[in-house]
Length: 137
Image: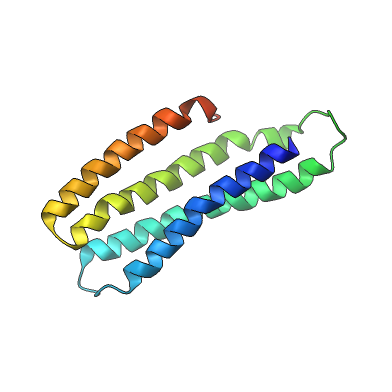
């Protein structure tokens, strides 16, 4: 189980790093661009969501590593899996929304195209991750 948490934390840190880099690029744009402001907000929101998930899974891995080999995962750690999965999906949603909004910084036509692609990506992400996510429902 410890290896699961380590892998979980590593994989989920990558979108946070990407969102933070995108945020830095959006800060360089002129202030009068509303799409850039909203894009910056969405990327910061994505970064915060995924960063919380990464920290939580890293500390969970540290705690799980102290468990005896083959022992059950404590209830309080197991209870965090579902909310962390949902928080990660919310972060992915924010990140994909910022991708969709990104084209609007250049033109309305490009904004429509990037929004359509972001929606298709969102559907693909949910279909790909659905079997692996812990749902509270």
